Amino acid sequence: MTKAKGYTQADMDEVSDNPEWTKATDAQAKSFEETFPDIARRMRGPQKAPIKKQVTLRLDARIVDHFKANGKGWQIRMNEALAKAAGVPPDRKKESKAAR
Image (cartoon, rainbow, N blue to C red):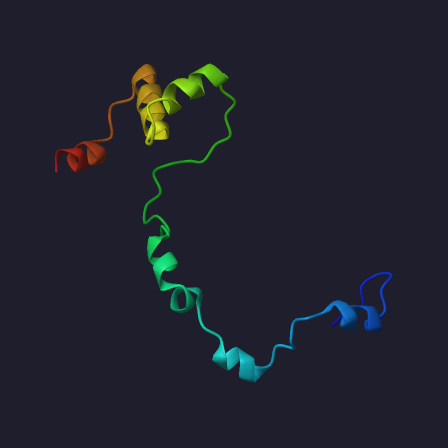
């Protein structure tokens, strides 16, 4: 353990409740998926071919409230409205999934 600025090794030992990590504890360690299979199954994996782009955007509260008022899926509805306003054709993959 490295000495933190202003603290002695005795200080660090006093507040440390984590046991030392050894090869034996490493061998006993389990992955997140093994330890919490129910949670791990619900988590979304990485996209194979990302088609969305994360952005930060400031919108009027009334616009966000309008889309959120109809409940779950408000971000999808907002994306569709923006695509329509921009004259971008609809995503064919989503249309085929909706038809199923």
